[in-house]
Image: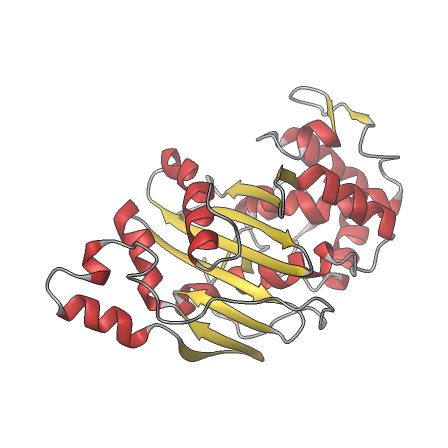
Length: 296
């Protein structure tokens, strides 16, 4: 089930983000359907690129030209690039950015932080032994597709603490459901979050501004590191809501380039869970197109 929302969590940040929001679809090497061909399609894409749109209290610019990235891959999707300092965003498919979906494995981020803050795990290297599945540490579990370890952690946290912390994080619709749903609420609902809310939550984590110990947020930073180049660092986590209809495929994270911080959230609407591998490549393509990530 999906609901529309215009509520956006998060506080203003400190790091200025430079967003490439101009109508530069053709210069970015997008598909011919957006940049040439029949002319009319190109005109529509170019005419809409850079238009301001309303998403709650976030000043937002739409990049309609970049919808070609999804069209070429044969999927529907939305993408948000967020500037935490002035609460502005560049959005591909604003309507999709408003919609909430289950966070799936992207909930491992708040789940890990809550477990560390409450002391239900002593550190990211503590080995967790779930009732079912392979035992492993949070360090091993976070980047993997493992679910049982995080179900065990959620059970340790308990309904009362989980409810309080999800509310404190202002995470999505803040609904964890009944106590007997502690192992399913982020996989099947009722917890749901929009791409815009993901991006603003990630901004707080990236700046170590969430209401948990800074050390725990720094530990998450280490666990989420994907790559480090001469002038950038990329952090991220995928998620796949395989147990709900219209399967959401997530990729969320942030890019640091010098003093610039970009947080992002991509969500694909997948008919086949086998297409989940598209999330990161399409997200990277959009980050490069918006000049947040250097091209490989």
